[in-house]
Image (cartoon, rainbow, N blue to C red; front, side, top):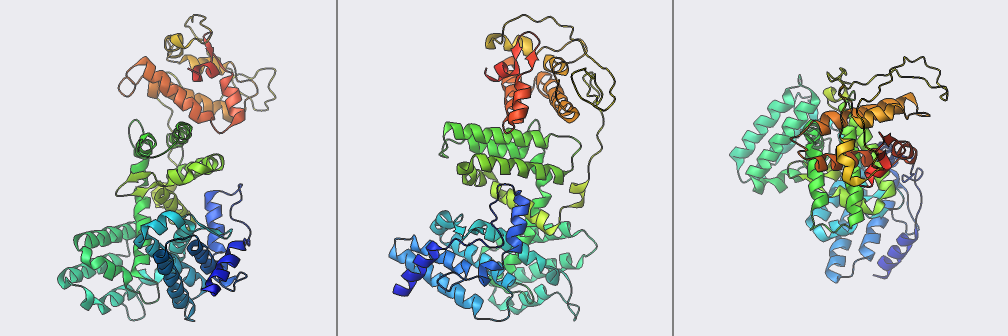
Length: 505
């Protein structure tokens, strides 16, 4: 017991940086994940003052925070068994140990849910947290998954052979035999895309374990020759399945399924979040929606931009990160953390579905309010590109209300005879100092005010609802960018008032 206490005290004191810190604020989520995976060997190769490896010491750190004697006994027994199992064999590489340990720790946390709540985001030195370990473990396992999907020298699949060895353990052998038959068919169908094949395998496994729950624990424990456990294979297939669901999540009218699911969580009063916290989360969702609705981008590009917005959000509102990660998207898909992990998996393993890489061709909208990449050059702008003058003069007369909120709807929602909104026409004459890219993005944004909000009386039936939606979209557009906010807020809407005044309504 004294030795254990000494180990805990020494472990608590270490804060060694391995392969460089992974918490650099300048790193994207994808780069951070790559660094963690590349440096994951350090978790089992580098030792601290106690002589234990970094991973084991971190587990002792967790144990030292427990107060219930029964919990301490359970946790220490698990550490002892994990240490003995992983380091008593010479058959494992360091990467193997990391991956196997990740699945064992995750399973242990799920079995004892109070450990999961307390330690899932517990830091493993400066490498990352246990949640990061769980995802990296899946990625490492996927690096060896070819051995499962390809036939061996005897012309058989190692996973089928391994499963058949344990047939006697399954209470419903007829169901198990049928499961093996279907699995073999999917493995043998090498002509179809790997994403489709792995997705079908996931659906098959999921159906079998739901229909025959008494078989699930037996199935997941089986070790596959030349690979890891069947559970590791199942977790990999789950990532492929989630990737195929992205188009479903990003679709929806007028707003995406992903947005609506997360917004329901933001509004859920049973989740303890401050008013300012809910506002910050809503602003993040609005920024995410802006990305989802952007045209001319592939699914992968949109996912990367969503991750960028997530990274910026976490830098500003780190105290809300765990709350956001635990927001449920759907019972079938999982939570927002599963969404993040699916992205990291596809990036790390370079396994995006091919259609997600296709950049759609953009066709000019058939509305009277069109976007042009050419516009007037004023004498005050240092622009080297030749542009054609296309100044639009509003035809509507506006009453000077000086930004009064009571008159916002009657002025801001005005559309001229040519179909241009007052925000659009006012903006085109007040963009001195804006780059061409900034101008085009903002004008595109303004076009959507007319097409998606002002003209849509189904989704936004009243003037008040329309104004609220426009304000929400503008705030989402500028929330993280001080320079952009200054430029947009300074725009005068006709002679009514400024966009800053509008956003204050």
